[in-house]
Length: 155
Image (tube, rainbow, N blue to C red):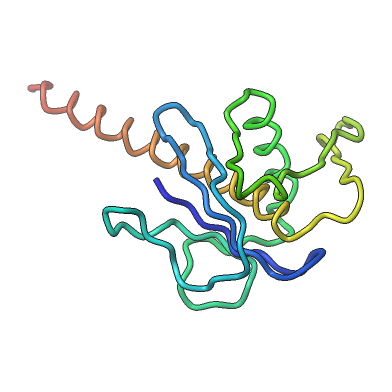
């Protein structure tokens, strides 16, 4: 599945980062980071990318905001620490430098070292979006299995 993040408001120019999500393996491949491109990317089959953004635009799937940051950092750590996050040559500048600062009763606090760029924050947003997408797909699959199970029940 093709994913796209359009992010601005951090260091540097607003950016678009394109990624491919393997929903079965929950692997995220960050393909490239480019200047902001508001229109959705398409894959080789003409399917439109899922789009997460914090930029004002009409066509998107998820509006990324500050309320999502803590979960987004946790999702980034999930993909990063489980070796499910890889970067192509055209996306090397988008690798975020994020570390756990401390763990409290309120959750994990993350530290960003240096000025985080729009490309780097787009990767964090893509991890958040990928995790949400796989969770939603898992729920739909479970519902289908439950629906199939109900067909066998007779009263």
